[in-house]
Length: 326
Length: 284
Image 1 (cartoon, chains in turn cyan, yellow):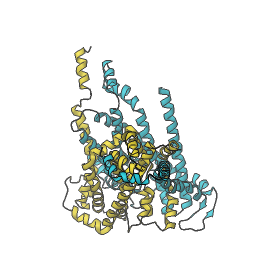
Image 2 (image 1 turned 90 degrees about the vertical axis):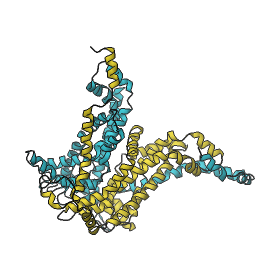
Image 3 (image 1 turned 30 degrees about the vertical axis):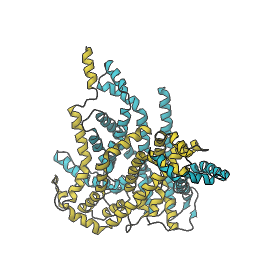
Image 4 (image 1 turned 90 degrees about the horizontal axis):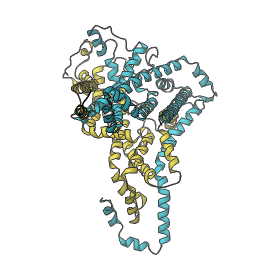
């Protein structure tokens, strides 16, 4: 490497000789350098995390104990009242149901299609990289652009999807007003963007499976399907769990897609009867449209706890599954 | 019964694609492209096309006129400049700080190293986005709300960046190089700059690409803290859409304009992006 060449001339022998009479200081400086530098190097992350990550999260719990309007300098302490109100707030439970429904509709098919797509991509394709970039293309779309485009495609009156449905003799679907249909449309949006990305992650895991295993199974007379279910899938388990956990954490905070899907643009209602309002969208509406920061903080804190609990359950399940395999 | 030679022939065919494989993949890629194309299609015509049940599938000639209206309706140049500034700064600091921390965690011995690293891995699963309310209060009190620093400072460095650089540095940087530099009298920071950074450049490049894209597409926090007069591209797009009547030729011209830069990056660096995702999968 040229690296050492670069360093050498900048430390001419003269410099070292000059400091020779006082080795104590130099050695002490060097020791100090070795001791303190690591902490300095990791410090930026911890400072940033403490100030803009940890502190705001903890302070959210504090704000949730107040009747705190935006711009209010003397918010009133109300204890757990925000939480009491939240647990009887039908709009909140409704939003939680919407979030769970959209999450399931997007994560389950996505995982299945990603695995199948990855299986296709493991073949020795001509132009393999081109195909991979091709399936990853949706990842280039920003969520906002995506939300706008899909809101247009799924428009109830003039949308292309309904146009196609009618042309092939089916009846049009009201992708906005119908609660379940709106969840399906939003889930399709999510799946469109992430399936290719997840397929590449699964593909990487598939390629790490030793070829001998497939050959051995083949000699034992296993067909394509059998090799897939008995060799590929079990070895993919850790990767699938990883993909599930990351998509859980992201999926439960889904915001941009439902916000831009609304037929009333700029609205935070998630549809006229909140039929596709998610928890994060409700949080945003409460805080930045109704300026009720205390109540919004209670929503944030409850969602935080839900996500952490689900992540923990995921983690424990993973441990249990891994243990049983051994 | 399969004969021996039959088996060998079969084994040779393992992983050989059928024609149907190409067909299915082609459908997939077309599906991936279609929404982009659709947005360009609407942007290049006028809203009249949307009332037809099966609209024309070839672009018209109005794209530049519609694009010009985007620049008249929202401060789009400003938004582009803001997005470049924000994403550029965030990318630079994230890569630098992540590489520094990754170097320390991978190659330097210090008390508490393992504990601190585990802490970082745990924070990967913490939805810090949910802290936006106090963050908003703090930014307002500081007088930063509306300014670009309010979207830059919270994203100076990420747990993912540190984790990613640490995983790469462990294998990419031999201890011998560090020792040699130390014998030559290099300070720690010189070792980082002249020995570590050149060795981890590939991982830093991938991290830079992902950080830039994530920051370019960031929406919730910029929407909260920036205003319509000084937006990022994503916030400007949302403002473009939020009239009572949605002028789709106009709005989709905006989405096309906002997507073109990222699509160009994809066409130029697609291979590296794919490699980055796949490497990340194996290392994670």
